[in-house]
Image (cartoon, rainbow, N blue to C red; front, side, top):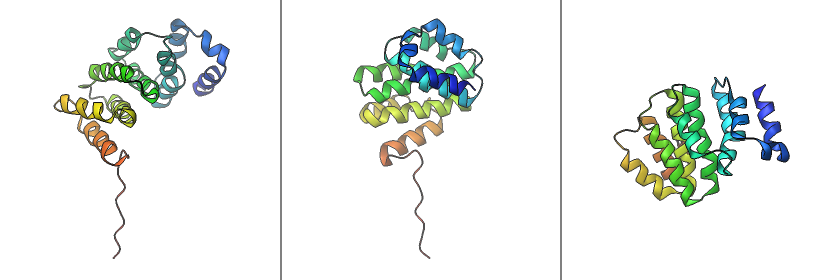
Length: 164
């Protein structure tokens, strides 16, 4: 049900432009699943952050939350910044990723991989440097998927069928 609310607000220009940080937190109350977090971050918090309606400080607070879903929301929110391709935004993305680089909650690890793979599309060299700098702290999944993305353009390269 959340999905519909988030999509309606995100598609209604006037409603979206009038959303405040407090409104956003109310809409995010009770996020507790992969789907609800990703819809919240992709439709609302990420775009609001990209346009300056919520602060880096707010997203950093989510990244420091005890709640795995808010930590995931912080990472998924970076996708909107990465898609813009701005070099300064990559710095903001990297700051959030660094706050969660040692988190081993599977939902957070998957989101960290997604955040870095998305950033790699527009900032491959910066992501390579990031991986090198954090090599010892990153989960194996993150290193594997992001390196695959950088090398092949895919998260998981497809194996080629052998003709026998």
